[in-house]
Length: 150
Image (cartoon, rainbow, N blue to C red; front, side, top):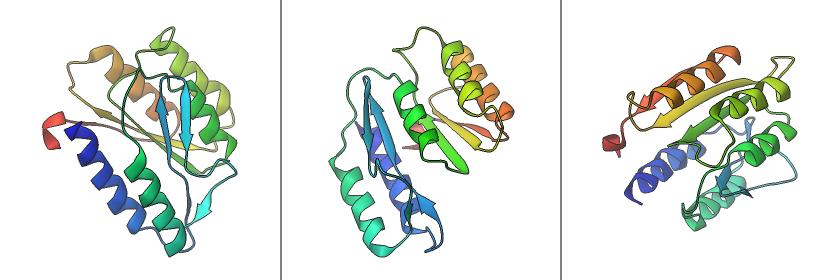
């Protein structure tokens, strides 16, 4: 998956640039599985934690369908201030609306900012619309990144 290689590079750069005082986690979703770097909570941006994250990311390979709901719940359970949702689609959900509803339910108080990034094309109208609504209603931004960028 060449796209995933490019994403992994971007994520690696982001992790390496974290400050000591910033807490983070990395959660992947594949089928209904949640691959969580640190299930017990956010980790500070120490060198040791960055190495753990880079090792973790190197081991993950994309496969299967994508149901983001378990990963979204896992992310909110860690009480973050900001969540980035990066996807090329959600193909294992009852509806795209159900993904929107999950954010609305878990972020009722609006404390968490949610940025969404679609790896794909603006022509994916329904997906673009739902990701834009999720970002807008959770004080975030939405971006479309072409697959060709990777």
